[in-house]
Length: 442
Image (tube, rainbow, N blue to C red; front, side):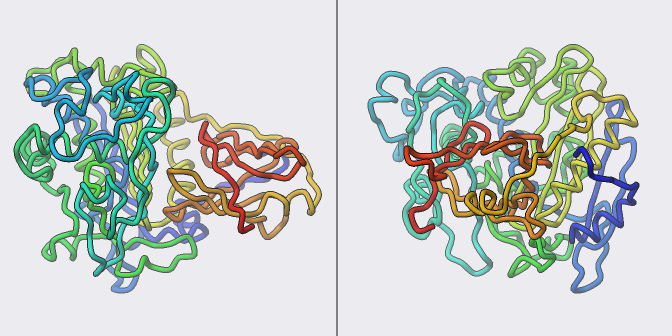
């Protein structure tokens, strides 16, 4: 940011400042894991350090791994990318309305987040909490802690991230494969790729707990019960190591290259990494062309942040996993360092020129903003020169004013716009194309 000094800092110093106890990084080059690095503590309460066997919650990086299996099932004729999903589902179905009557939701819609479906993310369930079935999650019925998953935008019209949509994929895959989703994932992707330290296991088996990292909130406090449970397996339920996720990167790069041992056929991998809309392919974000083509996905569960990036034409990639809510800030710095070292485009620092807004104007943005997907709490930063945003999963982002009602998320370089009603009162916030209404309680 213009005017702000960023002195060189070690990883350990950044971890301490951000209250992120542990980090694990694995780098892929030429079809192998070229190197791994681990830092800090998996569980500060016991002093257990992060090592190559430490398990982290992959959070939303569960989605691209599940997408690979969904596409493998398409290759086998068990699923169709473009047939109406409701034609294949039995029991629970996507609630019909005038939008779905005109444009039925397909698997291609679901994997590219263009199905017009609600419920962006999931907060998880504290240890000991009763867990809902997949159908209860989709219905928003007790004991589920999220809203019903419904279509409120015309399918195919625009991209809007929906963990709810991926939970529909979970149900679809289980029914089409006539088996438990977790076992389906083991059979079709985890075992074939050698991901022996990975499982869609929620709750985590007791035998695995000694290797699991403890999640930590933004203030450094551990997640109560060490970590939350996510029955939304396809959307958020993968436990894994950075090395195992690196094996997924190798597997996808192998598919892209058409290698004989790959999980997916080359043509399918090309479809997976072709943009459908607004930077999204099938299960992953895709950007660039030729040697600079890259795919990526981030992850954010309570107490955990992660990032996966692959460059298939270069046969390279990196996975970074952390056990802290502010791990996303650390990951952004690490990604810039890795990209600079290996000549990767797309991760150059973004220059922001802030403007000064009055204290009264800044205070007017504070409040809680809600949508069908989630809720965001906006507060004025302690120094008054920026805003802080707290999301449903504990993510903390800094918003720097670039003009009246226009801010930049310094972690993602995303534009955040505050919208006003007819009398000039701040009434909504728009982030990444999603509009959230300000709570009337503010």
